[in-house]
Amino acid sequence: QSALTQPASVSGSPGQSLTISCTGTSSDVGGYDDVSWYQQHPGKAPKLLISGVFNRPSGISNRFSGSKSDNTASLTISGLQAEDEADYYCSSCTSSNTLVFGTGTRVTVL
Amino acid sequence: QVQLLESGGGVVLPGRSLRLSCAASGITFRTHVTHWVRQAPGKGLEWVASIWYEGSNKFYAASVKGRFSISRDDFASTMYLQMSSLTANDTALYYCAISGSFWTSFDSWGQGALVTVSS
Image 1 (cartoon, one colour):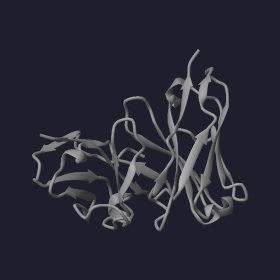
Image 2: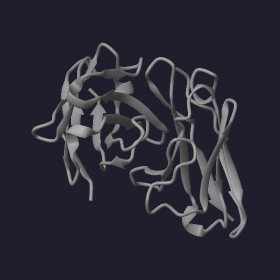
Image 3: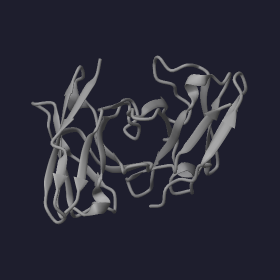
Image 4: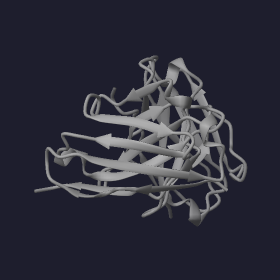
């Protein structure tokens, strides 16, 4: 199972919106509404932002939103803040009953 | 508040075995799917294995299948990862994680246990 494809890096200015893509196949992202997104600051454990494509756990800011179209899922960060600078990963289940992560995206706040 | 505490990490020789433990608190452990995820130094996240309630289902990444074994003790709220035939490629920070509403999401994470495979 190959890792899902994410852009290596994206950047934006405070207050702007940015979107991170996560591309897979019909055997993972496209086949299930089971995409999750995680934020990881340096030296810290990952933190769940989105599950089930668009569901935000309690305590997660509504500046984070998720969507999916065909084989590509997306995470949008609105009103970008300095604290959003981190690595972001998507994940999905697969037709083989395994789980797979994306390659990861480094978000830089300019 | 959910707390996950990994233990058992360390330095191990290639070809040897090691067992990681993950103790959970603040959650009804037996009703949640649990997982191991690893991260090699400077690299991305890699899913390793998952185990369902009462150990009814176990799933493994291709990279560890046949070498690693996941298990759980619901009475002790503890999960384990038995690792054998270790290679340098298994060097990583190993996180335990627990799912919530979606078995495929990692809702809570431990702080990780570092496993270094080196001669």
